[in-house]
Image (tube, rainbow, N blue to C red; front, top):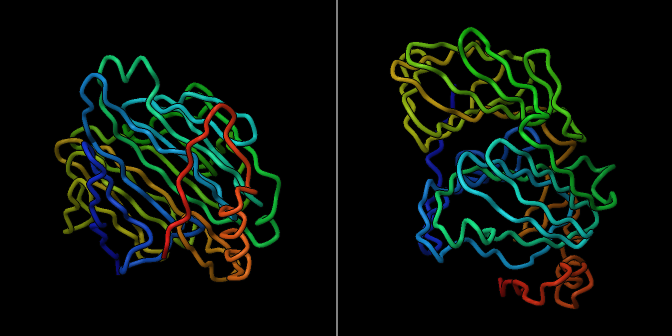
Length: 286
């Protein structure tokens, strides 16, 4: 049976974020342990997003935009603007610190913002890997038509194609644009699969899914997506992680003791700094 998730909407002052994972309905899908649906929103001239430096351990983050731009900076020295269709993949491993801010040109002119941000849990053998950051421009990602549906493979493997993004466990993440009247059959290559509807109308059999909703599909069930008026969706999933994961604030780990150590490290500012930035988000008080 499919599981529907509406998510929790958070107003962050001028724009909203819908927290899809983890939720009461589902904690994770494959190795994806966190999903924020950002916007869509519109920033007036002079306004923008400012996420101060903050830490992560035991996960990889992937940011993918449909509109807008973000400047990523981190403690391994990366500095990269991401724009629609690009991929920023950051592997935190044993610990990384990063910030995300609206670039100056977009801040000055005003701009739209719409995107997805996932956290991907790492296999236990890779939880303490060296932190790293990789950017893939849109042109480097596989893009093709599948029965009239335009697909871009952002990460992992799907429909017999492989994205250049280096992942550490079996997964997939697709950007799918269905024109009016189109259908897409989703292969049952992975034990866990899901869809977030970004715009338009989508039907799965007799079930209608609205923009902003996420559906976790029944394992191994044949899934066909139909759209009468056209739609854009994110498709993602993979194989479950090798054991349960604990998540506290920005930390993900198979070990509760490791999360406690990460808390101490951030209090003492031992997880690194973003070059050129002195601000940081303090550890929450629980």
